[in-house]
Length: 310
Image (cartoon, rainbow, N blue to C red; front, side, top):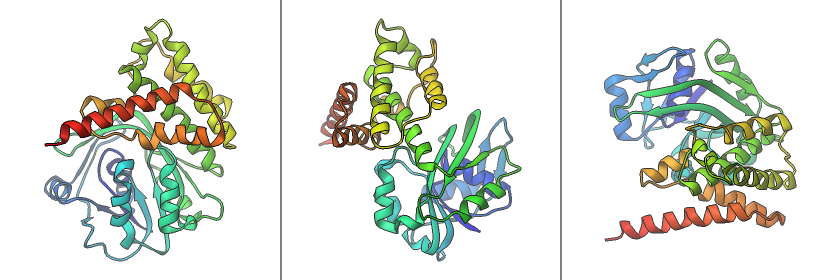
């Protein structure tokens, strides 16, 4: 199975690196600057589960050598249109596309571009980041890749990825209900991003506020009601884990979207909180906390655009 990974950053570099380490035929589609880093130093991953230091093949968007069996898409949602253009030459009649993006809105765009039958469902759980030098730092033991075919979609690539990674540190879950898995993560991400961005603080900071826990659980419940109305009610076991994560006293955990704001960068606000709010409105579900959180994110985006103008 020939695999193309778009991006060699914190997510694509980590999982692509583990696939390469396992002997898979992996090529990374990267921009020129990242290509130079990889040519000079190879792919470098620092992890308590085992470091990776190895040369890896790379291509640019103008030099993709024909269709691949599997294209793994790791990008920010605001780069999705450009990413789809970049991978288009790699997607042939027998190719499968595995997106590892946050949220759900990208699925509709990918289906429209490549056809629903080629697009797998997928999510990942990992704490990782990339340094300025291009090293990938794995921050905690968590490294789970969940993927699966949607209705009528391909299933062979899922089994292939699981087989390749069976002896690696990565836990691979091939799910026969991948859309429920994706909705459950969407609920967690949207509520976490809404609260930590709106409050400009980590979970533990919010819990110090008199109404912090109540507001957090209200926001989570709004997202749960949207998922339930959409036909994907989260399982209680998953909800219990999400509640515990979002109400832990002293926790320094926050959504990566908050870190994007603190750096003054673009966010996935439209793709995560905005999309959850849009789905709520379409389904007739009241979500006042989400509405306020999305207003906050839009104001941030408007200020950022204004300050960038000459």
